[in-house]
Image (cartoon, rainbow, N blue to C red; front, top):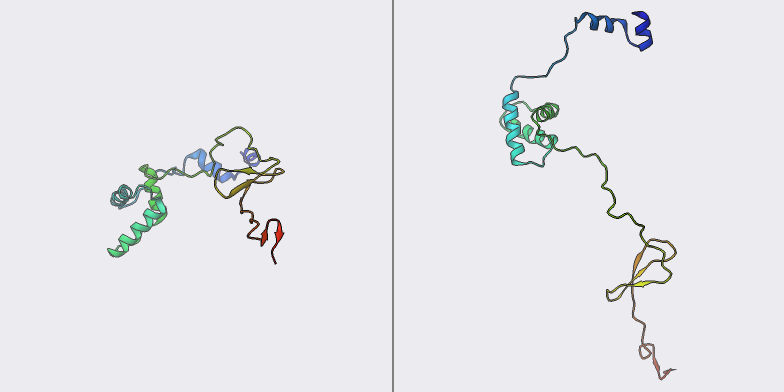
Length: 152
């Protein structure tokens, strides 16, 4: 047995106890008051279906403290919600695939004038597009010119 345990990198005492069956296997965990706690959890989840186990545990703690009872552990709430299928779907952080499979055109030579009044969309030389307000050109009379000559 020593060669097997050395090869596997395990302790001999651990393997010997497993072979004998002396150590009882861990079964499902149940505690006193789980049925009442599950009923309270189910009542809160039915009222607030978008709440996760942390928020449900916080609500239960608040209720129990106001009733003068001991607060509930969040891990216990998680265990009970998991056993009864009340947990929310886990967020994996994966993004959706792109909606298009083509390439976005960003390299135009000249500014693209949109249909919005007073706005240019500038896209040049592969840079990111940006919006620029289109300013009206000053008229001759606004510059103090009349018939192409400057007024004095």
